[in-house]
Length: 555
Length: 34
Image (cartoon, rainbow over all chains, first blue to last red; front, side, top):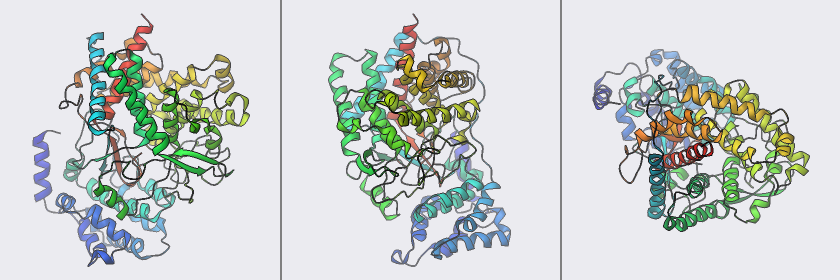
């Protein structure tokens, strides 16, 4: 966003007359307690998350004309009071007036313009230089921090796919009251932001490409097993490239070993499979402090707001096991046949007590998919459950890598688990739904495509008889064909940023595309290089996960 | 998850890691065909 537009928006936000009641005129009388000691959870959440001075400054004049209607305004007020006071609230009734507001304020997913294909090829030495620069960035970061950080940032404008119906689904499907409160209040604030374009422009400026930049001045630096596994895999790619100088190889291997140790030991959590009660060690989403490296401020804030509880998830477990397998680690955790565990979380297989409850993507046939969240030993699952397609690719990938170790070929139940996930993916791709952001809970379609490539690579490494047994209808070849066409003719035919380009290129390369198709992505990456300040190679903007759990979602 | 708000997760290292992997695999694929 050009500075002049930003300045104009800021001026109007500060000076324009309000057109209807503001968030604070509505909520302050209902939710500001005389002292913090008297606060309910909803009041505390409002004070800390929404009524702080920075957001007040932006939203102080952001009125909503819809709430000039006294009956609508009263309905919202009654919803807040019911959420605050009722011991067993009716969340459908409470959410309805806010859901109606959201439906009056539609958003649209970014759809960049088509661009002409590049005319100039990127020479191989330049590509090799970029590879070394990226590796140097990761290694420098590891040396400086003693881990490689990821960052999380809130965006109050929400997700375009999250409309009134989805809000009501979430209010019912989330288990913990703290999450329901956060859902209600963030979506109420979101309505005020969406109804005031200048405020929205300050909170979420426009950007190039699909993946959304992380603009927020407040970014939560953290360490998690999901990202350690991811960084370890990237560094393994660097070693495999043969481009790492001798002096780099020992520190790279050391960093990978440490990250895998973080996954398998530091983040390990004992649970029981929900149907059989069989014990399994899985990988938790966020290890407790000091391991997660969250600042004391944010950790305390999360705890104070009622989001201190963490549960493991199927995705982090799959990715951690995958990284360890690829690095030829010997560890008893890896001997546990994960398909047995996943079968008990698989829809329309053995999952009887953990169905998806936050069914925002229920336009899909979810049969065969494995849900996200794993119940801890105390039986907690604060977020309810949901089902994400990319997560299910990770389950397939780790199972292909461990096909022999887990004796999948000798076990019909394990084979069935994988075949059902393949059929789920096949339906998703055959219908074209994979390209619709609404089909995904956590990731963008472009990340799904890159991970199809990652999964396909593992599948292709299996013997042909094994591939035929798992995939008798050659679903994987159809999936490959459709995803390649989407990446080449849709994603990379439009204006991209470096993150879109990297994901598209990863999909093309791993799905064995003609290298001629690499040109748009390579050109974008090359042109973006150096936009960030040293030692960063690229502007630190695009994000991997586009949405996640409230406060608990740092995976 | 798409509720209650968007939490974006990423950062400079995440971008570098994706670019690194993408370029390594693109180079490998190109080399395999030459």
